[in-house]
Image 1 (cartoon, one colour):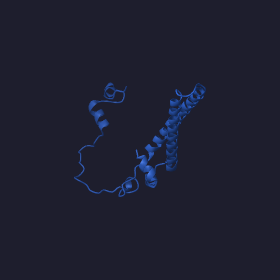
Image 2 (cartoon, rainbow, N blue to C red; image 1 turned 45 degrees about the vertical axis):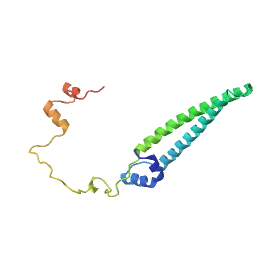
Image 3 (cartoon, one colour; image 1 turned 180 degrees about the vertical axis):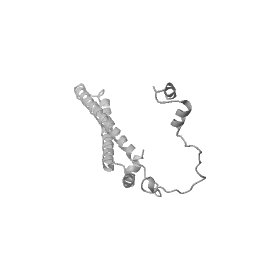
Image 4 (cartoon, helix red, strand yellow; image 1 turned 90 degrees about the vertical axis):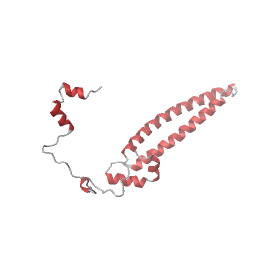
Length: 160
């Protein structure tokens, strides 16, 4: 996942990474959602601060003001709950979008798919086998006699 602070400071770098890697992502919408999350956090902090100030004034307040202060405290508590729910939902959406943002590629990396890759250096030579090599599943099936329906296959990969 990318650093949100770096993303805020250099969105053009990440926009280019999105373009180069072919990711379908609206970076402007992500940054707008980030701004909304920041604003919600700020508003929630203000509401909690005011609620704490009201709670401190209640014991010292004259009896005729206590009811109004208690009602204000309850209203602020309900607003704080509403803001926390909205904040959780928006933070979850923001996290989901952040996971989709690709890291900027190394400047020397070729652009494109497998065909754009080039071999820089080769150490040794690939081994030559007198038989066709098998992947690990095919090899296990051949030596252990396992197939997806067999008891040995189920024992090898227990699931909860």
